[in-house]
Image (cartoon, rainbow, N blue to C red; front, side, top):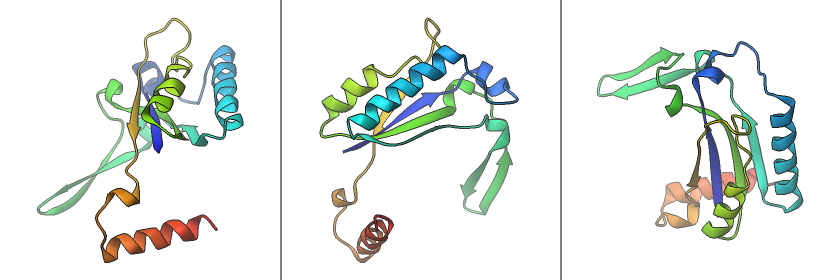
Length: 140
């Protein structure tokens, strides 16, 4: 089972010009990710640049429209993620409860966990077979 831990953004992060984090926070995050790696559950993890460097593509009946950042509600934005592979929802919860406060000790912050959909959850189809072939080719 794969789970993604989303680190929610905040106005302070969205206002940053260059990536910056207190040394204590960097040390806490490094230690946590090292622990995930030692346990063999870490798949990936990274911070994201503020939304002003990104864009969204909106789709409707007439096509698509590109909207450049920044985006308004910082608390709805994602500042980073960690992707883990575990054997159960309970194990994911256990790891997420150990996640360091992404805003720094004693500050308000939010992380959100979501389980990724696995290909074997979909009903069989030709399109699914193509996804499975693609997935297999990426592992070699």
